[in-house]
Image (tube, rainbow, N blue to C red; front, side):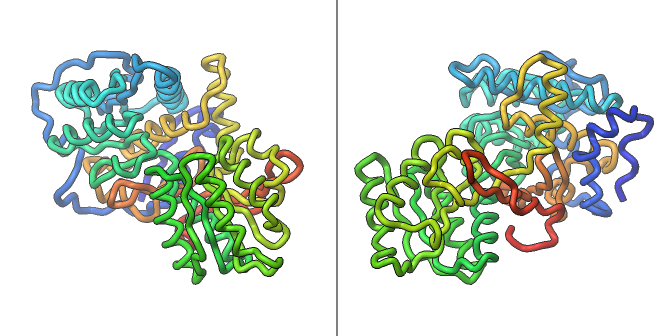
Length: 405
């Protein structure tokens, strides 16, 4: 079983980490066989050099965090948030056997590959990051050759594979959770309006599978790429509601931003009654601008519960004087998980068997687990929009023993 991970940690730090590390008990007893696959230090020779770049912690177990620190646009800000989150995790731990080496992945495939190669040469047993899909693929290819696992932050499931795990918020969990909840409320006939994009394709595929798992029927899946095709897609969906006798119980609209509210407005204007047809969204609806849309009143969407992030954000603001971006928790959880496994799992700490334990782990944003294909499942709460905001109507599961995943 996992031993006490807190040791002589202060009361404040215990409280800060309870939500994260406490859930490691979900995994129960660790496998006793290492077997083939990815493990600590596999492929790392004895000539590992002293680390270059910013370092957090002084432990003997080296892990690398690859971030696009010098990339253009908003990427640098995202990278800085992840870096600060890693720093905060080491501070909260107080004492651990970790040394987190931060390296610039540059935002390109080539620079990410170079950063991964350097991290491996310096003895990294685990790579956290990078952020962009092409970076994760390049860094992952190098790490896989050295039999060192990667926990990346991309939302593109195409970057995931055995040994390259994603800790980001993925559309699969969103769709599975909201469809499962809708079915539990009696919804049986579903339609979806999705963008013509890689994201839309992933959503559509999971939508079909989730509806089938919940004994429902997919009546239609319509795609859009611009305003004209959006209008056409909405018109096809509204045709199922002719005469007020709806053949559709629920309509999934995964996009947030301007697209989600616009589709909802067009559906309502076209005669879809949200009193009988439930509009369903994704985590992209966890946005005040989206929630102010009157046409979305009564709609449901999945998202992590708020308490974990709010506590994390408070500690982040105290440490760095600014509010973290929403996804910064992924960087924090990745470091805490690595420290917990280093403390608990010994030589098996970063093997596939440990990382893909089906009972999973618990982080700032609730329970999560890595799948063998590199993707993840997350336990999410359900929120309902009303009055220009959203309220939680069903809490997130605390384990993966139930359905909906």
